Length: 164
Ligand code: SME
Image 1 (cartoon, rainbow, N blue to C red):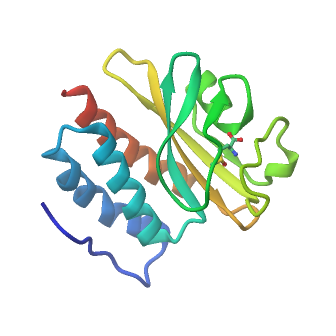
Image 2: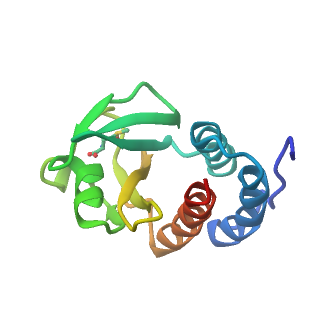
């Protein structure tokens, strides 16, 4: 297993996402444990982009429960009908929120969070089993570049997980 990742530090996000994807594939491709893989994906994204908060919530029963993450202390349990994570889970769509204060029902785990993107992750049956949540302390920090780059990483997690 690779013990470090390589990427062009001066590059823009689009290029960095492209450089990371195959390395994440190699990193988690040989390991069947979901939690171990999500932990490393969160670490790679934090290291490469310096995101304020990046992590996963996993569907457990009728809630989304905090999984591996990097960043400040976070809310432990979220309802399906609340917040950006609940919205992404319920609609099975990526959600970009340029200003979290303007999003009805946003759950403020940290008062420093200003914008957010949440990407659903699907199991082998096409059901959402987790979401990838990234928070920024800057307004309007996420674009279609992040949606595409994070979706590609979610797809890698899906392929790895659905194989088990
Ligand atoms: N803000 C999220 C909750 C999770 S934390 O940001 C880590 C939401 O509204 O779903």
